[in-house]
Structure formats: C-alpha cells, structure tokens
Length: 221
View 1 (tube, helix red, strand yellow):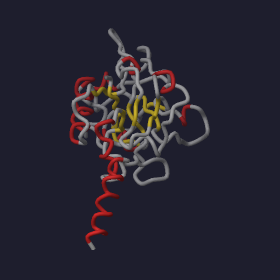
View 2 (cartoon, rainbow, N blue to C red):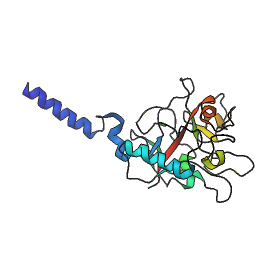
View 3 (cartoon, rainbow, N blue to C red):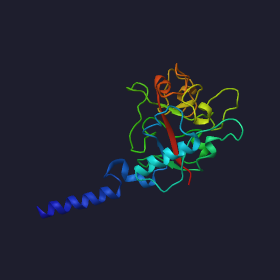
C-alpha cells in the first residue's frame, strides 16, 4: 500500500510538471491572450478603452494571471484614433492552456492559430460558436482586418465604446465561422457591424446577432 501511495505521488508530481494537473489554470501565469468570459453587461458601452482594459485586468487577475499589462483588442475612431494592433505589444501570445495563437503581429493578422478550440476564455473554456446555444462568437473589435481603425464615415466602435444605444461596432468571429465561406465570415477580428432594434450597441442587439459583448485581451508586455 505504501509503495502504491508513493507511486501516485510521483505520478502527480510528474503530471504537475507537465502542466496536466489543475486544468487550464496550470498555465495561468503564462497566459497572454484570452477571450473575456463575460462582457460589461451594457452592450458595447465598456467605459471607453480604459474601462475595457480594466475588464481584461480584472478577469486575468481572477484567473491567476495578474501582474501583466493587459489590453483590450479595440480600435477607436475620430481625432486621436487608436489602432487595436498598436495596443497589444509584439507577442508571442498564448492561451490559458499554453497554446500559442500567434508569434507576432504579422502572424496574428495573417496565418494565426485562432479558432474555436484555441480562442479560449481566461478560464480555459471554449466560447460558444455558430451552432451552439447561445451563439456568442461575435467579439467586439471596432477594427479592420489588419487591426487598424476605421475612418469616420460610419460608426464602427459604438461611439468609442461608450454607447449602449445608437451606433454599430465591428465584430469578429472567434470560431472563424459564419453564414457563408466568405473571408469576412471567417475573420476573427472584422466580420460585420453590430445591428438591432435597440440602436445597434445595446446588450440585446449584440445578443441578437450572435454575441455577448465579449472582448479579446492581450498581454502587451
């Protein structure tokens, strides 16, 4: 019996060393990318970039990955417009299970490793995608496919992430799946604008097109 117990202890130590004990949290300290497990609850009103970054920091801290410079992957429009790609550092970025989703900005906006199985929450959980109930794959970005901001011709950031009424937010599909096989439908960061009877930026509007007001968060350091 003592020998059996000792063997179990050795096996547990080996598995812990390999990151196979404790699930996703085994890699929490090395996590540098996640999809938020929850939104603001106010649609696309995130309290601006500052409020969005705070959401990323709070969720990362709760998952054991605090102490890093967490930024939301969001662009803004108008004077002093901000590009999402300029906010998130240079990579590489890994999810809660230690899987690298992109080694640098070029790969992130090119042939990255983002899909339903790798675009995990800070808890290491898969985000509901097309075909799941409810579908939550619409992730707020306000960005063009190269990670840059839109011009001012049309609102694509719900008034720079301060509106839960009229406006629109560009979203990407975390599962890289949409209504057809077109490039936008397979885009992780620039699939289509939000819309809905509440004006386009409310929580109900985001839900109606397959979202929940979730964000991509990256460690910029």
